[in-house]
Image (tube, rainbow, N blue to C red; front, side):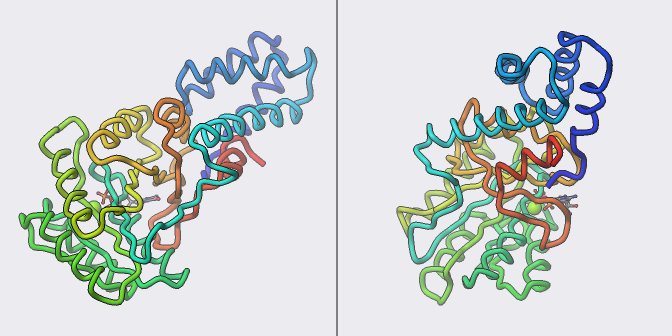
Length: 296
Ligand SMILES: Nc1nc2c(ncn2[C@@H]2O[C@H](COP(=O)(O)OP(=O)(O)O)[C@@H](O)[C@H]2O)c(=O)[nH]1
Ligand SMILES: [Mg+2]
């Protein structure tokens, strides 16, 4: 998932001849630099301190750290009332996935990746290019559609995104499609008027099918750091969120904000993007995340 792991740095810290206190201080710093909140890092390392012997082997230490990371995910899942996985379950015969997020986070690329992912699992996909805000907004998804051979419903620049979604829902319900993936315009989470537009899009979808969208997924840029927690807060407020997609995981080892999002909002990560090609998407795996952050 991540191309850069913390393992080397952790090994260096553990291998240095510093005393226990100094080792924990340096680890604290390292984990905070990977964007996990200071409060969570402190709790995490306190747990590790309790469990680890006074003198310890490097590998034992990393194993305990990994287990404590795993516990964070397990506890969050238990609070959500979920079993062993939070894989997406679709409720209806025809389902809608709404993609939201700030500018440049990777929404359009992710919409295309998801379309390919679900087509490979046998579903007939329709894409909706509801980013009518920018000149290139809609055409970018249309190009992906052409490349992948997946139909796209778009609109001209400045067109009402609600009407694009309306037309897309009409096609989904009346034609032979199983799933609609809606790409939306990027919006800064602090601009209420843009955020309210998302409420409208959701309403249009619900008019056709009250149990939809099955998933509203926030695409966050893994390199963006702590700001993504605020994004998650605000997008949750305006559009509801069922999950996070961690895009650009290839560019960083700073995936730590997803832990902060779990801690405060308990929104799980459903997918991770790790490159610019349509194939660079994987279902999120807690173990893969931990292994890739801390090294296998
Ligand atoms: N390295 C990398 N680049 C990505 C990933 N996802 C998207 N991008 C790139 O990020 C830029 C913005 O992506 P785009 O989908 O247009 O973002 P949007 O504005 O949210 O729709 C583009 O150059 C994408 O190729 C990813 O997982 N890894
Ligand atoms: Mg876009």
